[in-house]
Length: 99
Image 1: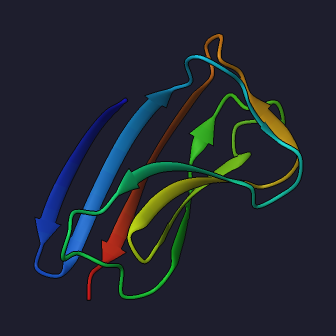
Image 2: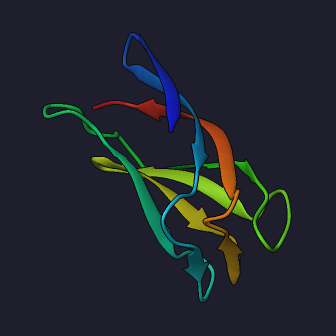
């Protein structure tokens, strides 16, 4: 995974490009999650945020969202889908309002 972060006041910006390795991510239903990052100790999201991501998932380019809640940034499926371990990728950016 490649990622970059920027802290602007109380906003944390995270941009990432992730390639799936090891095994497929098979989401059997919508809103299943795959964790990406844990915020460092002392940082917490002020509220839950969802942003569209792009991927080559089995349901199309916009089959995955990126979400932050409390201390975790995760991918969320928009429906039943797979991101393949053989060349599956997801790219996105999320702005995290911090407490």
